[in-house]
Image (cartoon, rainbow, N blue to C red; front, side, top):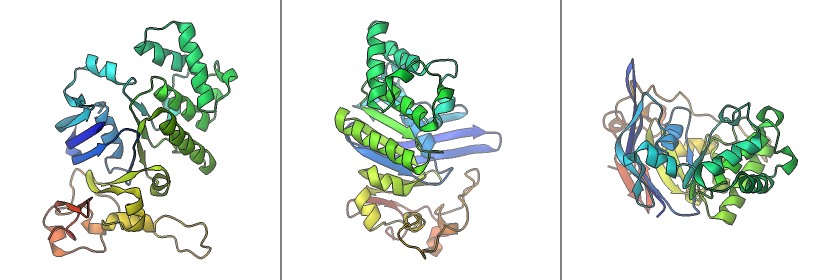
Length: 316
């Protein structure tokens, strides 16, 4: 087992009170496995990704749980120890490459710097590897000296991916890597992740709003809602027979371009304010299968036919 996340809790301490952004999330990830994390804005997806890297920004804090990479608990490490791990063993592709890249730094130098920060090699050797990586992600080597603003959004994201794989990490966390990209470039980025996984054996956590996109590339899907993990299962099982009412509604909201008269569906209502979440199940105000107990008690986490689900439909 490469990654083991156990009972993870992340809180943000604000003037309005404590926001429990991630509560009791547990899952495992094998080597070379792709896991999708899906949910609406505010569900805790990005916070979970940052917590795995132990990069939760202030005023956030990991208050409980463990994140073990190859048996080493990242939540217990010092900042010095984490600097040795980040980039080399676990890397992250952030949502907006334009704000992640230094606008005054050439794209090739970004990759060279990442390599030299962890490996004792000459600048010439690092540059040679950087050129190879640019070619690997589909960027012409003659763009090495370009600045970020000279590249398209898709190309900037490819530079971020090249940086992420520059040290051949065991795990890459991609936080909405296709946001603001057109569907053709989205498909190209997903193909690139699939190829890198096959060639380098890298495990990938893909965070996205787009369930349809994740079903195409992921081995398993984790569905989050209002800081809770609602369902975790193989992607094929999620697509064929989702267990949680929220997952079912997400699948219904996926448009089918082959149906001319398809009615576009949406989930009524909005996710709750995590300063004051509703009692009982947090999805109950929007749930079509709501029962009286759903408004009174938090649903139990259950294993149903080998699949994780947090719902009173399976917990009575």
